[in-house]
Image 1: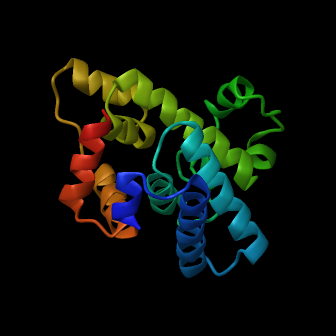
Image 2: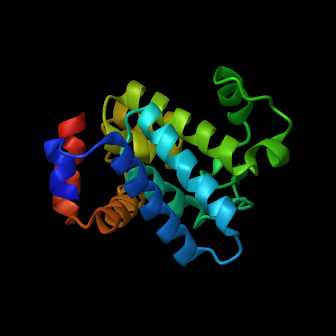
Length: 188
């Protein structure tokens, strides 16, 4: 499948089913509280939003796994909510930008479909602003202002989080970490 995908020899529908099936399998393996309909809807949304913003769906799957371990009701100590762990102070503006009605953090961000749409959109903004996917993923976790400040002051960015995401992404892809890092460099 990987080689065929790279050479463009498979249809979009086959790719769609492949990525959705991979996400379904991983979510099912890691979250026993979700029903099969919810798992499929989450997987389908991951695929659709990833394609919309030109991300590999398995990268988004890896971010969600790392952020929330597929728990749609997860809340962090920094008030990040849901699957993509979107912080509530930025979420209303992001939601508005993509036409999602804001009904408060719990109602909006605990909705897996809305959360994924907001989270992937946010990553796309960070990717555009930083012109580097790896830095965008770090900014997604640490916040863009903290990352920009470190870059401005020529400080090294912590890569613990992004390495965790990339390791999981490589695992999902069946690639080595080096192959995934080369793939990401090629997309920047």
